[in-house]
Image 1: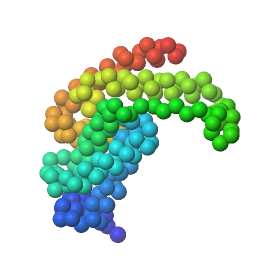
Image 2 (image 1 turned 120 degrees about the vertical axis):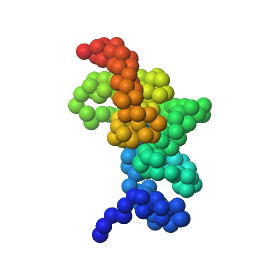
Image 3 (image 1 turned 135 degrees about the vertical axis):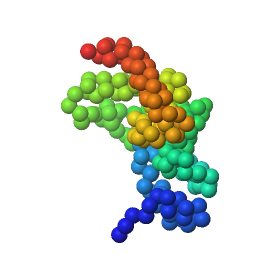
Image 4 (image 1 turned 30 degrees about the vertical axis):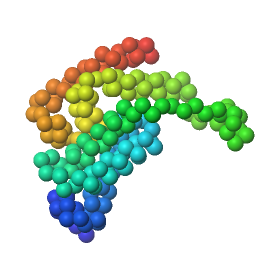
Length: 192
């Protein structure tokens, strides 16, 4: 059975064929979920953002011009939904008393199966520091970095998505990495 080319699926989807739209979304959903997860860090939040993005993409499919690949287009919509969700003032952490959970002591709920808790904590702190460092990058650098590293788009598609040349995109990626290195230097050397 041959796989239907993406251009054909897009054309058929624009005519309202649900199977073509479903196939397009099936192909790109995993990478969209990885992108959202890399930004939001909570599986439920990532799924909400991707579902919102796919709903918006479905409603605007006829506006897809084909200037970039479908993956680039849908990744940009997912990125925008994630950023919108991060700016939402209602987004805040909720604390739960572990002693109230199903009569189990909190220490039993928190028992770790990993052999080295210090390393696990250290990795989590570095991951948190990386997330914060990425969030502090200027928007132009952050977008290029996330599309290239998290969404795993090829350099050419990142450039097309951002309306830049490949060399300008490389410059933004270089500056983003340099900014991250600078932000993370105290965290990294504090761990050694």
